[in-house]
Image 1 (cartoon, rainbow, N blue to C red):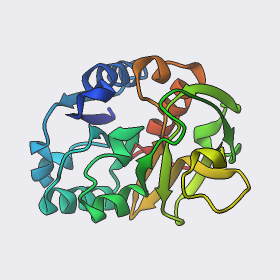
Image 2: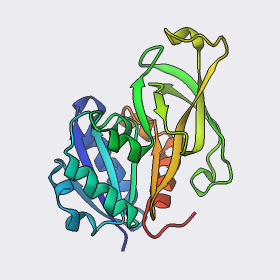
Image 3: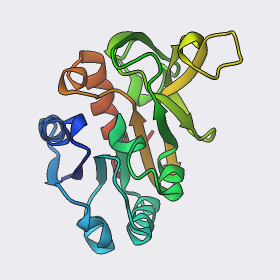
Length: 222
């Protein structure tokens, strides 16, 4: 049985408990065994982390100690997956460069406000994660992310230049919003949608999330 650890908490504005329990229900519906914890203590126990095939981080802001990052990097390099959505991954632990190096991106802002209407363009339609996921529109935060050029991009979105206070390029700005990367033997998956439960439950978002989590699991191959 595939074992998943969901770690949730941090800033309450992203409804970490509500969304984590929803994610747990989705994973359990396909036969995965899910453990939910609402603190970071388990990250200090390398041997406990080795019991899981996938770690889902849903923790906005906060701080993390070096030993916890080292433990995560080690278990992922050995084959455990890491996944997350929205601020639960790329807005977590912004004090840690090693966390950002691991995840592949960093949230910096949402230009234009909190309720932008924008289109998500699937750029890799052949990947296992994007099967059955077409381009879609959402009305929610549009994450502006600094992204590791080594990631493999699955989807992007376009920002209006007028919403970027320092943009010198008159052309629209296109940035990744979903990607994957490898860390040793482990797979890492991220997308930027999920400010609230309603966004998580949109059909294309829900499908992208679940297929991304499945791909990232230890036993899943590309």
